[in-house]
Image (cartoon, rainbow, N blue to C red; front, side, top):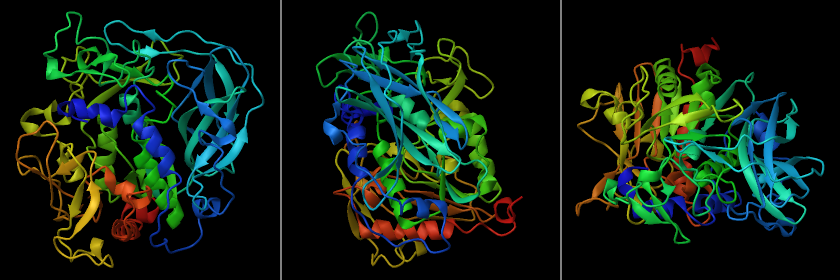
Length: 531
């Protein structure tokens, strides 16, 4: 999210209340949607989704109620963003007051529209109120360092996926934390990379009116002197507590719960996409952006890397890995918008238990500890002359937050992406352009492509912008080595696949056309030969 978003950012963030992204995630995981099924042999994900699903994970099931950040009735976080089959992951849980609780594990998917499958439960565990979070001076980092409440040994016969741990007290309060289960040994057509770095950037836990900080905001007036001039970014949360850009964290820890109910901001996009992909029967595996940074992703095992939602915060290693994969013939799909926008650095968390890194992004402040990758600010400004602008990888780049949801206007209607959708040039597909949008900037570096097609041309008025409209673009380019890179260019594309009120058969068919092409590895590449 660009800093120009200002007051609209609060609507996107859902600051001070049950997070908007969290509520959307609940809806997306149980919303209807159709679309063509993937052809081909059976695969683990297709078989998994034939198993009985469950709605028991949702708030309200079993008379559960929300555990909020003011009461902190039960909060928890995982020891890692992901775990491989056969390995263990720990959950660090605090209850206030001390009372027994359980941890239930759910795999998110389609499951005949139920949205999840219930896989495991902890025994009844003794709860305790753990230490207050510690805020580091200078950087504003909030970390917990809580004791382990329960460890899950992931069975080797589980299926890679997006998982939730539901923490529930014996009084019925419930919160969550997400994690991914990897299957590092298995080749698959697609690897879905869940944007945990961006999840953490938006995480302002705890939303208690005094403590919480994200990479966007912190509580209080804008700086010690209350100066409101810095980027004009003084606001109040939904409960009236002041929050300000000047009080944001410069480094954020993964060793803390997610705010509100525990479902990350804008996870609705990821859940909507994965529900569609699994319902359609595609052969998908899962990892996280932290895995991509830490070297646990081998792109050669997959025909395509899929960034399913809003993946805004990227390290140099993440970008280098994906750029090299494209160069070797691995396809890439960005299903949302405003990706690869902020350059971040990862470093050890000195206040945590050493299990997860800190993510660093100084943004408009000088970065006092920059390394060889450059300062932690916009990728467009890391190098001179806009040389590292995200458009050179993605094909388009962020250009604004629409003031209102707008139709996507079809361009290049004769392209194979639109085949079978029935669209004609200039047709409008309602509500697809929303949240944030990408566009084509002729002044920014172009991708190294032999062909590049812009598949939409949708005008919108931007929050914080001038009185002239901006142009949203959906993009697809192909390299000389046969790799294709797709960018939807809008937050609402994945919502059109599965989310109630947004589903559109034309977007579903276009996405199926895309994925049926992306599953084919270019001949002669490492991905095709298994090298």
